[in-house]
Image (cartoon, rainbow, N blue to C red; front, side):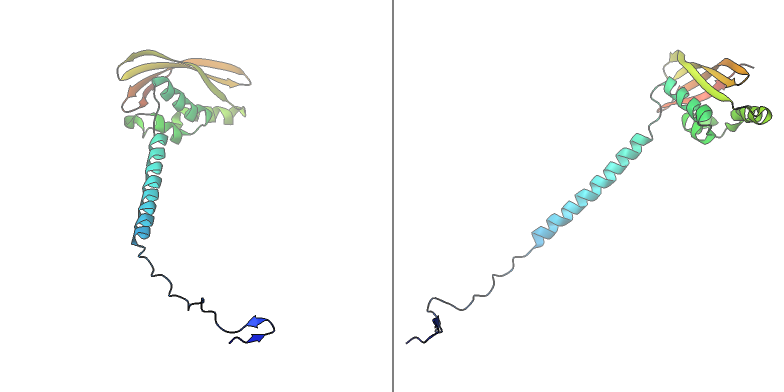
Length: 170
């Protein structure tokens, strides 16, 4: 017997069964192991990338001319004796490169005139294995005119090329 109330069937249908228990949870050890492996891989990739970039950044000049140009750029254009040390041999790294700039600074203070330093014609005049001689025409320009001279550099290859000596005309 069914009871109908306003068109709604109130007796349970024989097809409706009580709800079943949810399925048992599967162990997630595999997912955690995969996540741990993925995190370890990402950490190793980050460390490896940092070391690769760090090593590339520390590479020095690949040829004698680059060593001289880097040295001159740091010393004469940037006027940064500390940066110039990156391009010189360990034997002279403790030298006071500011000495080369003292005359320029003194001239600027004395005359009130800005001294423009430039170089060109950087040329390897001789190279024998791990040693080279490089020359560069260095000029200083003021309102009074331009003076030019040729500087000679002794350049040596350790892992990279480094300036190990500098001779200027007296």
